[in-house]
Picture 1 (cartoon, protein in one colour):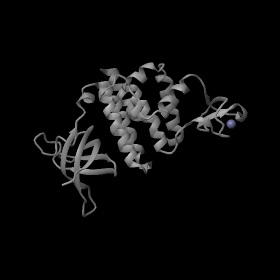
Picture 2 (cartoon, protein in one colour):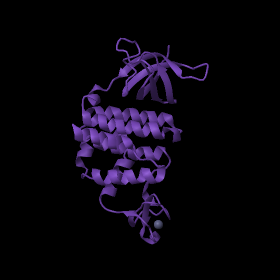
Picture 3 (cartoon, protein in one colour):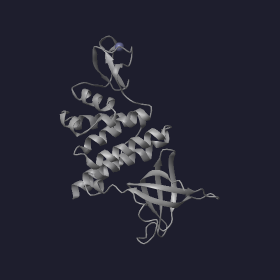
Picture 4 (cartoon, helix red, strand yellow):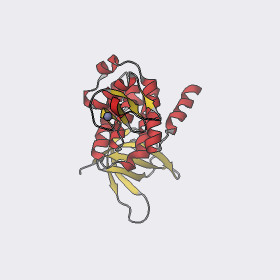
Length: 247
Ligand SMILES: [Zn+2]
C-alpha cells in the first residue's frame, strides 16, 4: 500500500478525544479527522501531533463530514526542533503562514518541498531566525507577490538602483524615481536579496555566518510587505513573544 507523504501543520482537539489535522503534502492541503488521536494509547496518537512528517492515507467522507485518517506512520517527529523553544517558535510562525496563505498557492509540489527542506535545516542550524526569514521571503514568490531586487520595477534596467519602492514592490533606478511614498534603502536590502535569490539547497550555516545581522530590518520589511500585499498580520508571533516574555 502506497502512503502519501505530508507534514502535520495543525492538530486541533475535536470532540471528546479526536483531532482535526491539517496536513500539507505535495498534492495539496488536507483536513481530516484522526479518531481518538488525543488518547495516549490510541494508534492515531503518534502521527497526529503538530510538527510531524507522516505517511498517511485518508478515506473520503461519504456525507458532509470530515475525511477520515485511516492509516498513518511517523517519518520524522523533529525532536531537535521540539526540544528547542526558539526553533519551535520559528516553526510555528512558518506553519501559521502556511496555514493561512496556502489557499492562494497552486504549486503545492514546490511548497511542500520548500517546507520539507526548511524543517530539515531548522533541525540542525544555529541560525534558525534566518530560516524563518528565508521561508517568509521565498513564500512571497510562491504567492505571486515576490519583491523585485534584480531590476528596476519600472523600466527593467539592471543598474543604478536608487532605492526599494515599497508600494511598487521593487527596486527603482535613477531615471524612474518620482514621488514614492515609502522607500527602503540601506545595506539590509543586499542581505535580503542574497537570501531571496540563493536556492535554499545552497544556503548553509557558513553562508549565514558571513551575513551582517540585519534580522530586525528584514523582519520589519517583511511584516510591512505581508500586511500591504496580502493583508496578513501574523498573530502567532505576538502570542509566542508573550509566552517567551512570561517564561
Ligand atoms: Zn527604471
